Length: 240
Length: 240
DNA sequence: ATAATAGTGTCTGTCAGACAATATCTA
DNA sequence: TAGATATTGTCTGACAGACACTATTAT
Image (cartoon, rainbow over all chains, first blue to last red; front, side, top):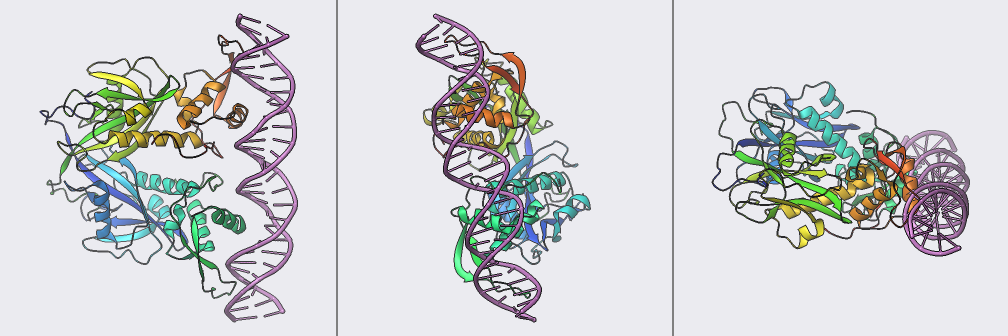
């Protein structure tokens, strides 16, 4: 063992191709959706957006660069997920992939930008059960969704799915969709408002829907904050 | 963007040296300790154990191989922590490091095995404040300790620090040392025993200490289980 | 008996689940 | 007005913190 390296005169260490891949989640049409791109080269099919890391850029820079080419959406949250390095995960050559989790507010089309062959949001359910995802991307996606689910429990991360101004019902809907479980509006509101910094009330109110109803107060996201104690989801179920 | 690769006829992608480094934590002398090795090559000094990944092995295999050369302790827990890839984190050449967190029961000497120049356990406090750790290993260590601290809250991971048979006081002591905070014995016991699968009672009892006292029941670790709701530590404090 | 450690019982405050009641909008 | 959604209030059970009390060992 040579604690992370040999000596300077050991240039014969193996080198690896290094990629970043992103699980970009959003909420649209009352469902949790993930951004996928259609591959232009073999193996064809749908895959997570990503690409190879350049020689001089950091991993964060690499994933932001790749996503900027995919979509012009502002990433409201980006965190490293895990690194996948099974020797045969790419059939042609060994590729190490550093996976990221990104959350974006609901938005229209993925603005198939620049050289993207095709990019589109799919429901997570469809991506995992109907599409054959390339490489080990189904595993990465499942891990990303599980990370998002569990971080909603103990952080205020859910606001990353929301637009700049949102109502309490919209925020609650995020939880209900991600957890696939119904939450009591009154109790949810109490918990969110009792957590300092989770949301910040603007004075304004939303337009009532077409059905009428009392106009809801508009909030904006606070700093990311830890919920102590956490919000709790019932049981394991749903996908993955 | 080319979804994680270009084409098969694009062999000009950059290649990177890939290392695994491990934060190996244990509890000894009433303190949280970390395994460090003394580097045999420049830059000299102490570092986390680790080494370069071979061309055909998985990341898990690589870290287990490197640790087997360091110590013959059975790893009771091993999980991937995060990947560190800042372009200048190694002064000589760019090296991507996949960091792992390992927990081992208290044990004697680190059995400086095989080609290890020198290996020893240091208290985390000393490693972070007194030693200059090589590369970004201080950051990795701090991240590993924080991961361990937070996973004690919501999983039964603490048993990984214990020998095959342990008393409730020993398990509680793990929490007190890692969190640097005193826990109420009665309440701790109630919480642990009320969580199905956290510990399994053996019929046996420990030898009373030299001071006497009622012999404590011996338990062994159950499967890793999620604490719902979690055990709670008071506030952020201590190291990191 | 006394000291020391293990283990039990119990009171109390906090908080989440359930749900009733009130407020404010549209049609 | 009725219908819909937002918001407030309240009752209750689960559970953690605090701490007194009992049990079993050594000296």
